[in-house]
Amino acid sequence: SDFYKTEQGILAAVDATYAYMRFGVGGEFSNVLTELGTDLITGAEGALSYPYNLYSATLSPTESKLYSLWENHYKGIGTANIGLERILNSELSESDKKQSYAEMLFIRAFLYFDLVQQFGRIPLVTKGSLEVRTDFKRASVEEVYKQIITDLRECTANLAPTTKEKGRATSYAAAHLLAKVYLTRGSAVADKRG
Image (cartoon, rainbow, N blue to C red):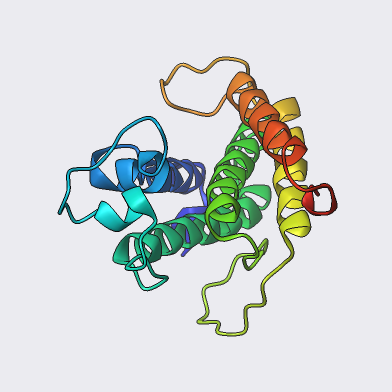
């Protein structure tokens, strides 16, 4: 629609894309996918998340929590990709285009970083699409990390250091995430570092 070519529409789309980053920051999803199975916390015996705590044989790829992570993150990546394409052709001022574009790169990199750590080889989608697709191929871990690093380098250079609104991406947040990505790659097997 033409609304998403206007300044108001583009900024609304950027704001909406942040919602995908909220997945896993609270409640059971956060604990199950990021904390259980480590020395930080342990689950109660018999709890629904028990397989994650012990890496037991009942833990399988059909787990609903894994599907929810996959679905949320790829929806966010798809939305960010569409936003990236529309921002460049929008009525935004050049400074707002630069900031909004960098925010979308940050969100895409953040979501891909979560996915590649959980699943390894994943589809790498960098173009927006409003059509149903079923032809996805998994990219190598190296390719995914190269895209994450490319996105984070660009947004680190183009995001403002501070914002008026709490919770928005800044150049410092992007640099922090980039450092975390580099540390993750540095600790990986040499031929899979990217």
